[in-house]
Image 1 (cartoon, rainbow, N blue to C red):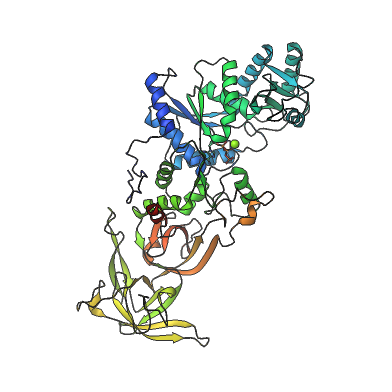
Image 2 (image 1 turned 90 degrees about the vertical axis):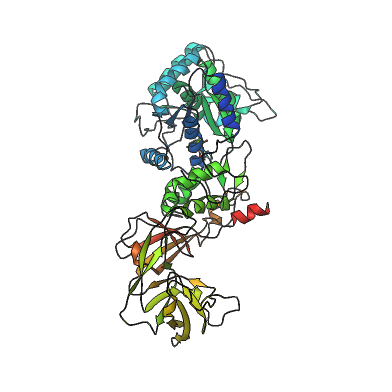
Length: 572
Ligand code: ATP
Ligand code: MG
């Protein structure tokens, strides 16, 4: 089990500590009092209209986690009641991503399988005078609903007889009417302080094929009608949703009560996860994908689960992050640094360290024998990681080092390579820069250096101090690779909170992807499978991408090495 290396003050990293939050406290109390008379049952109810994202991951961790912790069940239910936006490809993506996160559901359901039951409930409501067919269209219904300060005005059709309502409802179902001509509304109270309770629409006509039910239905339930009743049909106990559904709780309760369910489920709201510098609304994600601002739903710049996975983040990191963020009643944004901290903390403990030069500069060791190659023993893990292993790294006369690790005219504190200065090569020798070779344009193209054969392993027997250690690869052995360096997709922390009229795509970061060609990676990685994760020493965490071909490796940068979060937290 993963336990973090550097737990933050006030932040749990170990999943062994029992979790506490207001929802867990409530569930624990309900279990203790046997409130529902059955084991707890939660559900994750996505609408299959997009790929799941980091916000869904939080909801998944909560719902699946609770079922496990309290010996209950968890259902995966597709809330697929809108024929216009849903698709089987999203169903498949959602299932794959939940499994990738490490969870398995006890049962799989589809709200579209409940259309018959929902229709039966609709008939029952009509018979009892609790619902009526309104022949105003959806816009008129909205207009006549009034405002927070003024009551709504009843539609001319509100007092239709039960017989007339039953007749119209069955003809709506039979497909006699065009879209928008009639709706079924609950008959509650047009002056209700909660606007949602002012005779909400339950069913609407839509002559549109449904991705699962085909043309079987032309009346579709609205969210409020489908959601709570689906929960009740399945015997859910705790229906957990995000805060924007707080006002919907009243209609939820009204419907499950009117439909006659015993010990019906109860809805509880918690704060959505909203991460800085990204968007987690499927509507916006869909636009980024369809308008080509990103390469697809799995573009590593997106915080879709597919994007996160391709970026190299592990499911363990996402679970730890969800736990660190916690479950709260009040809305709050989450800093990107907190997310990246969870990602680094996890990768640090599990990935091998290897050498890769991003922007290569040739070094020739003039006193190293031509044609000679030495395998240097290089460990994959630092001492503070409980994993071991090493590989031979070939060392030879011609090497690549990082262009940034050389300065012709360096300031005093530059502890890397400069004319006449000595530096340590990681796992290798101390070298001294003797000569700088330039092309006709004056650019440095090669450094001619000498190495000290007595310093293999990096220490001088005479005890002389060399501060800097740089990474390198052998020129004759390195593999060429492409690096995809990702930065935030947006330039502002809150792309959802722009001034009226400013589109969120106006704050896309033009440098969110920088592609580096001609980077040089050590040969040991060439045979690793796609999806292997590494730390490229001094550079960042990377994963090999599915676009890799033999001899043309591609790596995605998961996250850089620097961690600003620990420092920020320490400051308080
Ligand atoms: P979106 O706005 O991205 O479309 P949604 O709420 O419409 O989100 P659904 O597929 O209906 O998406 O959501 C499935 C479940 O995931 C719901 O219970 C919802 O409350 C939860 N969920 C969605 N977004 C978040 C989030 N950002 N944080 C926590 N839970 C979320
Ligand atoms: Mg939704």
